[in-house]
Structures are given as C-alpha cells and as structure tokens.
Image (tube, rainbow, N blue to C red):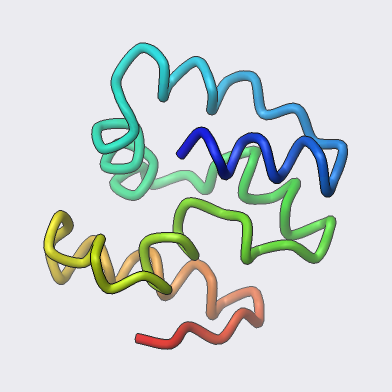
Length: 93
C-alpha cells in the first residue's frame, strides 16, 4: 500500500496524504477493506483516474495480483473490479 502511495507521488505528482494516514493508522489491509467497502469512491481513486493511472489504485493492486485475492471476499473483489471497469480499466480477473 505504501508503494502505491510512493508511485502515485513520483509518477503523478499526487500526494495522497489521507491514504497514507489511513495505511499508517490502520495498516494496509484494514485501509483497503475500508476503502473497498465504502459506498463513496475515494478522492485518490478519482485523482488517479484523472491522471489516467488507475493501475496505481489499491483496487487495481488487489485485482491484478492473485496473492491478494484470498484476503478479500468475492463481493469485495467484485466491487474493486467494477469500480475499475466502470472507468475503462480492464482487470485481469
């Protein structure tokens, strides 16, 4: 999760301070669960979409890497995939 923050900062000049704060306070897993289960799409997700870098979202990280799938329910994976695909990002799962 911190790597996502660093990449967004270096590649998009997007300083996702709220995201980093969540990760530092809750841990990456709990922060991801909270973001996925939120009815609102995060500001960071929108910013990365504006920068055409949905690949740097937590949702993409989870969807694209099967090692993370076991940590999330089918519904959570479905939510992450739908958010990405609704904005034109094609997931591998």
